[in-house]
Image 1 (spheres, rainbow, N blue to C red):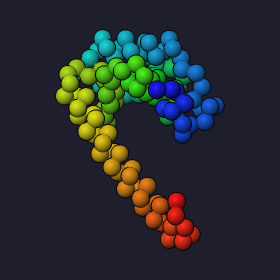
Image 2 (cartoon, helix red, strand yellow):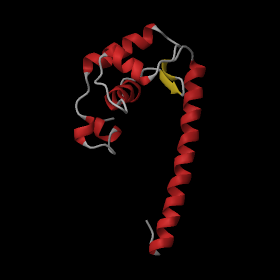
Image 3 (cartoon, rainbow, N blue to C red):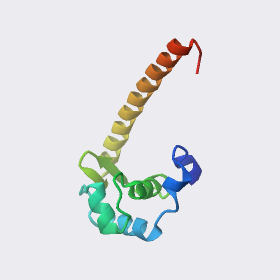
Length: 122
């Protein structure tokens, strides 16, 4: 899987190259503190990512660690953690599926609105 696929909705000036040193620091820190959730801003600062309102550089590194490097990192409203057992990963996957269904409902609603306004089909 290439980075182009993962970041297809973001422009190149936002994504940029991943800070490999900070990414490795994040991997090590989370793996050494398995099962403990940390907020994005806390991890960003601790691991050396550039500070930003949305922590885009940090979130990009998390995406790569999960989708390319296949590390067991999970997230919830408490933050990000290295999964300490398989049930944490299953729970995270289930929550992602719920979000996916919600996104599909929104896509369907927006498409219906567009079709009503324009009498067209997307």
